[in-house]
Image 1 (spheres, rainbow, N blue to C red):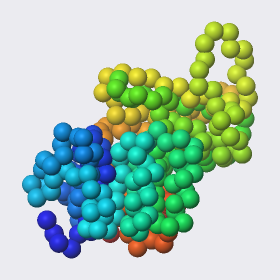
Image 2 (image 1 turned 135 degrees about the horizontal axis):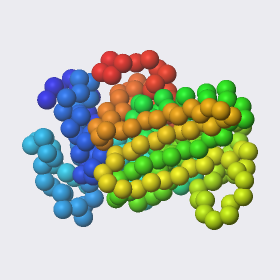
Image 3 (image 1 turned 90 degrees about the vertical axis):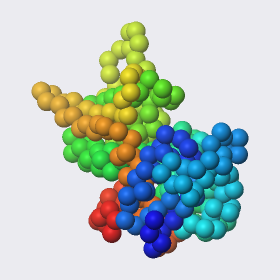
Image 4 (image 1 turned 60 degrees about the vertical axis):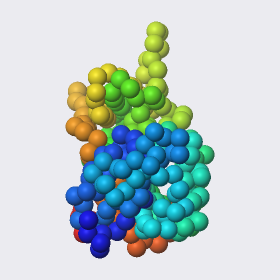
Length: 270
């Protein structure tokens, strides 16, 4: 492991995304894994991280932060505030990929940007975040078109619709000067009546092992536009998270998104 690479503390390192990120960091030119955080109750506690015989899963985040320069968090939303508080106290930049955050949690993360560089996104894929930008542009350009969003995920996903589908819906709603909380339609059953002109439909399918498919439909008289992103594996999310961590290095305190990463023009490993 190269000593000149920046060390990352990975919170939730034993989960599916944590394992993917650990593998991506093995090959990254700029960053490397410095510490792997898991709950003290985890059966992984004290065991070596796969691919890193010199690093074990640990629960002491404060100690890990003293040895690392940036963090990536893919743990459970229940521990978000405690985790962010530790990073703020240590003045270490943080990328948050944890999903299922409440509006209050998201506002808290924004506020913590006053203290450290912090980036949150419901989806770390560069392609999905570009899709959100394109969907917003289409919503502004295609006046009068109906918008529907369809997402497909594996059978084990616990929430619906996905945070990414809501993220895309918010991008469309914002472009239309609307609020998804008021115009979003998440269930249709029975005699629903005609479609409301400003509605944004968001529908979910579940099954198999699909990592994540999202399509934004714009439907107008005699034509329709479909913008689709398909994730073939979780590796795309891991690579996006690692790129986001590299983006935060040297940044001033603030709340950042993956759109900032895309628009920065910085290449991976720069």
